[in-house]
Structure formats: structure tokens, C-alpha cells
Length: 305
Length: 298
Figure (tube, each protein chain N blue to C red):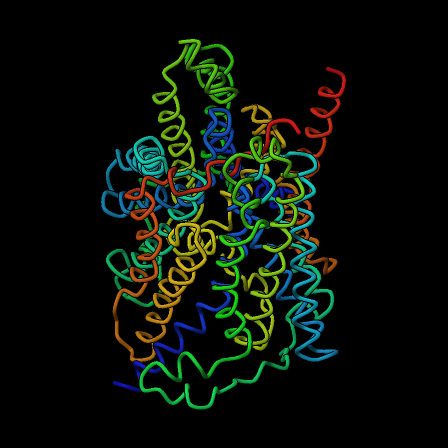
């Protein structure tokens, strides 16, 4: 049983890592008033870029290239949303479709139709001496690849940045009212572009995590809706970094439970567990009076410059 | 000759769900409702239609009941997002995404659980009864009567949007809800709720038509993302119902051609998605460029 529990906790952290990374990026974008549905595109672009780069130049190159690929996709989104003031939702949907299609096409061109058994070097697990020996949670929390530790560090860092710095205040001001922010000398377009860029970098890193820390290979469409899940996580976490980290664990736990069921051969309706976090998010949004906790200018482009 | 006919039949079969979900998106967007949950509503409609088709498959009423039930289920699924927005202020962008996931997991559960076919081998429902199947229009092809449903509803939607008071209220609400409310023209809340329900009904009907006309059973991944492609379809049509029918046909040609090119010339079929996305981006880039020009001249 304890072996089962260990596997479950480790699985929770493992599945939660890319979700948390992507959701932290999305938190910054949404706090600037931008809902980036194109995040899915950054994740899948990151996954493919990580695969190609890591094959030729190792894990480190894979991570960097993945983040740049995620950034490139996000900047395309920013070009439409900030520069052309196109609708965020429509643009985001198109960007995700574009990236999912383009990565599929590039993958098939580079690796052939069937995608010959592709293996990519992966990140080693780093055991933190002492901490990893803590009973029950030690191994789950502290015997993980380096990206998981990066995610641990980013949570307080982004929280501090968002609530304790002028730049963070500017970000939140733009998310509540771009007009008022502009009146006080902030450039909403620039703030939003930078927030979208951060979202893309972290989305790309999430994609790299899927390949380099988990699958060890690329599969078409392997982002599997994680960009959309990240949007759910941000809402469940009430647009706050700490809350988002906890929400990512909830979603991670639901998937880990699925594997636990499958491993033990239990014929439990695991799909219902998978659906649970989404229902929980809906309930949380409804009971919290969504509009009062969501950034006021979310999904709304600024009126005039 | 036979091959051409088969390709043509594939195009029409593919265009039908795109037309109905495209209409769903066009109606919602026109009314200022950002329904990106057509995929979930499609599955809700497909699920109820499959259940009705299996349970009442022998009776003559089973086909109309399956189609109406599908539309109703889609409307209910979208209605949840409508209530969440009107009562609790939850953005429908977020709630419809959640409901897409819930619908997909729900179908995954049902086809392995309560609705699974009797041998419990395949994750799908049993076939719906003959009486619940949409008739094939051209013998020897897969072209089914669902195409006529899409055509008729597209024309009705176009006429209603242009020439009825309800259509006017929908367009006014979508164009500027604040003006519509303050001018005292429109009960914005009621119009918005109706836009949710009608949009969901179209998407749900699309799912029912797919089950009754093409697959005859419910299974996972019944929709290869129709609800998302529908956004491209509706936008290319500039949210006009008649043009939505044309755009659906165009996208049907595109996807069937892509599949054929993959077989014949090994050009990856995923290229179709790239073209579809490029179409959306081109449409909004042109629209954005136009507004900027108008603003500069004003």
C-alpha cells in the first residue's frame, strides 16, 4: 500500500510540474488582462523543439530551444492581440490550431510518417540529500528532475514579483483597467506583450518537461489539452501564484489517481475522477462570484491608446 | 468515376458537422457569446442521440426523437455556461473549456460503462436501430439526409438573423450590449441566454446527426475537434449563416483533399489544420487592418 501511495504522490508531482509551469505563465498573462488560449500552441511547439534540439545537442539545448519556440508562438499571438487588437479568444484558438498542425507536419517531415522509435536524452532525477529521505512525501517532493525544482522556485518568486514590485503592480493594473493604467503612465501594450512573452517561455518549458522529463519522445498532439487545463488551473487557483500551484497539484493528483487505478487493475470509473477537477473549477468559479476575482479586463482589449 | 463520387461523398459527409457547428459558433459570436464549447455540446448531443437510438431504435419516432434530443442535450450543455455567466459572472470562455473536458470524460466513462455494447469488448455503444438512422440520399455513397438538415437550418438562420426582430436583437446585443441595454431596446440577459441555448442546440444537433447519419454509434474521439474548426468556419464566413454553409463545404474539401494527398503524395494531413488556422489569422489581420485605417481617418 505504501508503495502505491509513494507512486501516487510521485505521479502527482510529476504530472503537476508541466501544468504548474504553464499555469504560472498563464497567470501572468491573465493578470495583465490577456487570456492566452494559444498557450497550448506554445506547449506543443516547446515539446517538438525540445525533441529536435536535445537529439542533436543534449538536454540543456533542448530546454532553451523549447522556451524560445514557446516564446515565438506567444509573440505571434501578441502581434495579433496587442498590435492588431484582434479578439483574444479567436486568435488564441487559431494559434493553437496552427501550432498543433505545424508541429505535426514538421514532425512527419523530419522523422517520417510513422515516427521511427524516437528516443531523446532525458533529465536525470536529482535526489536532494536529507530531504528526499523524509517519510512519505520526501521522495515525491525531492527526488525529481531539475524542472520540478524550477517550478518550486518560480511560485514564490512570481508571487513576490507580482505583489511586491512596481512592475508587478503595473501588470495587475493593466489587468484591471488598461485605460486607468495608461492614464498613470503605464504602457498597457508593452506590459501585455511582456506578460504574453513570459507565458510563452513557461509554456515552452512545460513542453520541454513533457519530452525531456517524462515521455522521452515526441508524439503528435502530446500537449493533450494542457494549455486549456492550465487555464482551468489559473481559475481554480484564483489568479494567484500560490493558489495556482495548489490547483496544479489537484489536477496532477486526479491524473495520478487514474494511473494508480489502472496499475492496480481496479475497474473504477477513473474518467469521473479525471472530470472532477474541472467540475471543481466550475463550482469554485461560481461560488466565488467569478467576476470579482478574475482580472476585470480579462479577455478585453484596451479601448484606444 | 467511382473514386470521384467517393471523394465527393466524403466532402459532403465532412462538411455537414462543420456546417452545423459553424452555425452554432456564428449564432453565439453574433450574440456576443464566446462559445468555444461547441465540441462539448456536440458530444452531449451525440450521447443522448445514441442512447435514444439504441433504446428506441425499432420505433418510427426514434429518429426525430434522437435528433431533437441531441439538440436539447446540446442546449442544456451550453445552458450551463449561460447560467454560470448570467447568475455568477463566470466567463463563458473558461466555463465552456471546462465543459468540453467534462463531456469528453463523460463519454469516455459511458462507452466503457453504462452504455457499452453488450460484449464489453469495444469502448463504444451498440449500433443504433435502423429506424433511428438518417436515410442515405445517394445509394452507394455515404451521403445522408443530415446534409439537407444543415442546408435548411442554415437558410432559416440566415433569414431569421436578417429579417426577424429576434435576429435584430441578437445582432444588437452582440454589437454593443451596453448601448442595447441603455437604449432600452433589448433585454440583454434574455437574448444572451437564448444565444447560448440556440448555439448549443445547433452543436448538439451536429452530434446527433453524426451519430444517426455516419457512425451509428457513440465512441470516444467522435469529434476530431469540430467545435474548434467551427470557429474557423464561422469566422471565414464573417458569422453569416449562408456563408457558413459555403465555408463548411470549403473546409470539407480541404480536409478530404489533405487526407487524399497524404495517401497519394505523402503530404502530411496535419497541413489542413495549418491552412485552417492561417485562414482565421488572415481574416482577423485584414479586419484589424481595416479598423485601424478607419480610426486613422476618423
